[in-house]
Length: 242
Image (cartoon, rainbow, N blue to C red; front, side, top):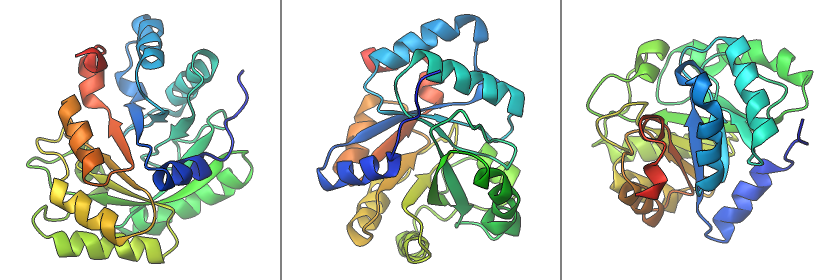
């Protein structure tokens, strides 16, 4: 087993200060083709990815553990849990995004699941990164909206999105994650990324609905510090070779 990567948040924060853009590949354990896992990991190692996120809306914990084990064994990238619920925790990972779904008003995703997870996390050597999670309307109902039973923020209401991000920062979150959702028809609006990144001081993560390299670059140009690519890479492991 490889050693844990230390101080991941400090590295993300430093990258923001130095204007170095980061890229995470999101792997959903339920969607992994285990027969071709070695080929997938080889493609990840050859990609420009700086981090690996692991998680999904509905994931069996044993499958998640198996995937994290393989990632730590066969890659050197930091492995960060991106949990859908308190069962999606692995002590083998390097860190976990401790998410609060700020865009919704379902108390389970605002605080209840965090309360359930806290005693478990206290017993683990995981770096915990408090993250304000904001779901943005994307043209179709995504798994996140369906499972969390919350409505995303109106993609045209930039002021509300900004106020939500600022509230997250004021509450002590270390990251703001703008999410269109897995398989989204539309990515987070560029003008929203720009407005939020210019008016908060913590790093901004952007994910969902990104299907082309050009979209990654545009998200960077408008202020995203870390971009997450999931479905597009799942569908085409040669995504970064185009």
